[in-house]
Amino acid sequence: MRARIVVLACFGVTAIALFAALARPARAAGCSGPLSTCINDDTLWPHAGPAHFVAVGSAETISSDHIGFGLVTSYLSRPIVLQLASPGPHQGSADNAVDDQVNGTFLWSYGFTSRLEVDLALPLTFGQSGTGLAPVTGGAGLKDTAVRDMRFGFAYAIVAHTHVAPDTSPLGSLGIVARFEMSAPTGDEDQFAGEGWGVWLPSIAGDYRSGPWFAGAEVGGRLRPAARLEDARVGSELVGALGIGYDILPRELLAVTLEAWALPTFVRPAVTPAEWQVSARSAPVRSGDLAVQLGGGGGIPLDGSLPITTPRFRFTLGLRWAPR
Image (cartoon, rainbow, N blue to C red; front, side, top):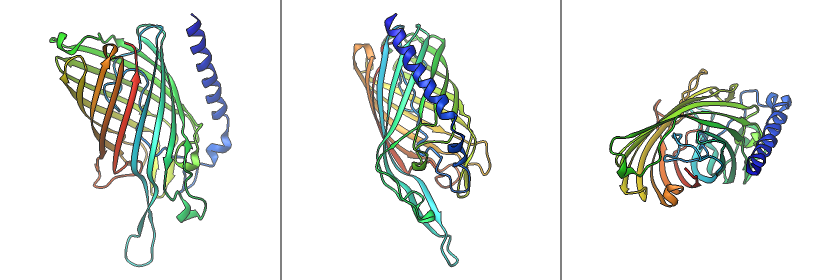
């Protein structure tokens, strides 16, 4: 009971911070114009709680009256590149507004029941380099670190996913989870780390396991006003992610996964950030409650080139404690 009171208090403070941030119209007004920095340059928004993939949401939730936590770090290469005009017949030169970047997302979750989980995500930029908009506006470049938009919400297991050892489930096991999250504009919007408004994040995820094989999928949206940077516009997006994995060693001692995700936008001109990643995952203790995952991949040029917020390549390292 005491733990539930503490969790409710924490989420109450988070909700107050969210509404306070939403009540600052001047900030959102500063995000208008053709050179807005109110764009989140990192499209990987990991969920709290259990996870077998990096981007695909899990269909498992935290056990009742248990607390989970984690840290997912990510290195991105050139997620935002500007095309600067130059005299002559050439198209211009490329400028790395965000060149190298290391982000980390601290994750917390709490199981109110065996099916209902509440989540909190606090992303930060640990280090970055790049010119920002300085070559265009003449202002300052990027700072070394930045605060990013926090997120919070809940997950509910529509079809409870039975947690059993892979080699004891030859007939397969299915799970489905519905999520609803929000982001608060608490980040540094002049660092491509936050947006001038909150973002609504509904989604539904499912996964299926049969023997050593498992697969997952998630579909959802990120609903927000549009921001413009040069000829690109970032607004409301459809989010789709798909992954497949195989347990090399039993009892989740070692598994490999392959996944991909894409975010086609609803605004014009349309851009579709997309990435793929291959990972190795190990959950050696506590029946898989403690897991570490290391992966790497890159952008997918669906339109022939990598659009804005799509890095050339990405490496991730995640550590999670998620009692199931």
